Length: 274
Image 1 (cartoon, rainbow, N blue to C red):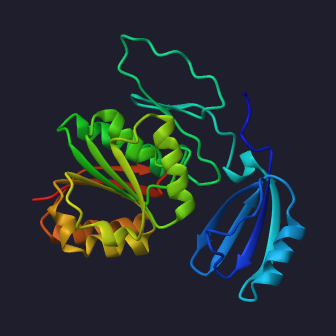
Image 2 (cartoon, one colour):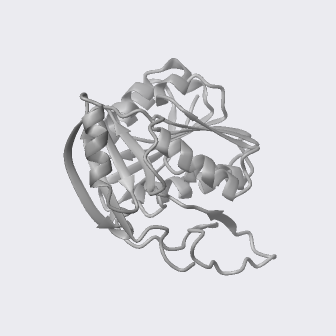
């Protein structure tokens, strides 16, 4: 297969929460819930089905609908990329053979309709930060908060982490991550669970990864268990947000070991706790 898994996406934006257990037919891809809204993804037009669904559930309202190509939804054509030792490829594209003498780390990644195909600057810098960390030490246990497609959790397992917990608040992200774990035969070392990021900060681990919205990041660094981790990688931060997080980290006597800035906008920190 040489193209994306879906040619066209049909997306229906509903106000109100739709149960994840709702059966919506063979062309239904998934339900992305965002606070009090639900985004339903289909591979073919489902206007009549969605209208019937809304009629059955008075708390739901069809606010809008969109039709776009899969590549447009992902922000461009999903293609194999290399970031340092990592070679990340969608399963529907032929990857170059691995040289048995190379130290390349291959990851098969199907993002589905979840964001996180490896092309965003913050994701790339997190992958670079992971490799920089593994040159210093070898974390055995990792927690990845806001895992999305599971890419960073997969990357830590490829580097040699023995036990990884991947967390996301959205069930569709967790379903996507679990599929990618099996695709890479890493389901025995990575556990994907649904939940709020801040509820898992106290989980014991050598390394904590958080590539998240600023509001969530603020809550994470306020949890006492955050500073029990030997290392953390924090990303997804704009300039003023990065200053705030840096101040909070150093106030707790942790050290920003390395920092990366992409396009003068996105900031990523590798933090060493005291």
